[in-house]
Amino acid sequence: MPPPWGWSLPEQSDKRGHMSHVIGIFLAFCAGALGALTFALIGFPAAALTGSAVGVTLAGLAGLRFDLPVWMRNGAFVVLGINIGTGVTPETLQAAANWPLSIAVLAASLPIGMAVSQAGMVRWMGFDRRDAVLASAPGHLSYVLSMSLEQGGDTARIAVIQSIRVLFLTLCVPLLVSSVFGASGADLLPVADMTVLSLVVLAVAALALGYAYGWLRVPAAFLMAGMTVSALGHVLDLTPGRLSRELGFGAFLIMGTLIGSRFAGQSAAVLRSSVLAGLWLTLVNVVTALGAMAVAMVLLGMSPAVLIVAYAPGGVEAMAAIAVTLGLDPAYVAAHHVMRLLILTFLVPLWVHRVGSGQTR
Image (cartoon, rainbow, N blue to C red; front, top):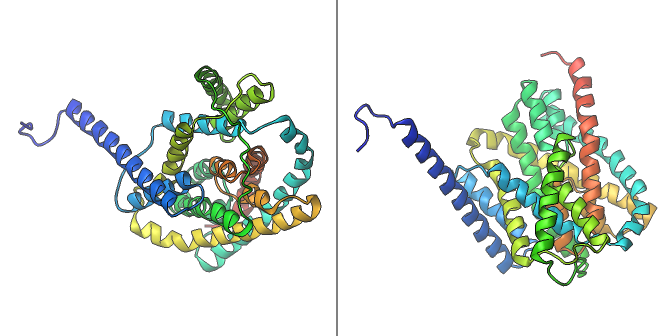
C-alpha cells in the first residue's frame, strides 16, 4: 500500500528507479538484437553493428529511455580492442612504413572538411561561428561536448548533429565498401579460438592499461588498451587465437546499442532542427574522405576500400570493427582514427579560440 502523503519512501523510489533503468537496458538490447537479426537476414554488411545501431536508434526515437553503465561500455571496448589486435602480425607491422604519409594526407583533409562544414552551418543554418566549429568537428564527441558545455554552447543540438554523423557513417561505410569495391574476402584473424586463460590474461591487462591510458587522456582508451595487449600477445605468439564468434557478436551488439543510445531522450524540436545540419556534416565528411582517399591512392597505391574505412570520420571502435568484418587491415584503420582524434584534440580548441576572439555575442 503506497504512503498516504502521495510520494514513495526514498528506498522505494531508488528501487523503482533502478528497476526502470535495468528494464530500459534490457529493452534496448532486445531492439538491438532484433535490428542485428533483421540486417543479417537481408544481407547487410556488419549486421551485428549496423543493425543494432538502427534498432536502438528507432527505439530511442520512439521514447525508450536508457543509459548503458560505464563498466559495460568499457568492457565492450576492451573486447573489441582484443579482437582487432588478433589481426596484427609481423607482416602488418612491416607495412606500417607507409603510414606516416597516409596519416599526413588525413591530417591535411581535416581542416578542409571542418572549414566547409562550418561555413555552411553559419551561412544557411543559423549557427554562430563557435557552435559551428564544435558541430563540424569530425569526431571526438565527448571532448567536443565538454567544450560546448564549458562555453555555454547549444550542446543538445551539437550532440544530435554529431550522432547523426556517427550513425550514417556506421551504416554507409560498410555498404559503400562492400557494394562498390567488394569486401576483400580475407579473414585476417587467426583460425582457432583463443583459450579462456589467454582471454582472461588479455582482458585483465587491457583493463589495467585502459585506466592508465584514460589517466593520460589517450583517445578511445579502453579500445586502444585492448588492441595494445592483444597485438603484443599475438606478435610474440603468447596468446594465439581469435575471439569466439559469440563474444565478438556481443561486443558488436553493445557498440551498436551505444551508437543508437545517443538519440534517446532528445526532444522532437531538437531533432528537427539538427537533421539538416547532421546530413550536411555527413555529406561534407564523406566528400572530404573520398578526396583524401584519391590522393592517398595516387601517392601510396593502396586499396580504396581500406582507405575509405580509414579516412571516414566515424567512431574509432565502429570503423575498426567494420574493418575486421570486411577483411581489411584493422591495425591500419584504427591507427588513422586514433591519429584523427589526437589531431582534433589540438585543432578544435585552437579553432574555437580563433573564432571566439573575433565574435561578439
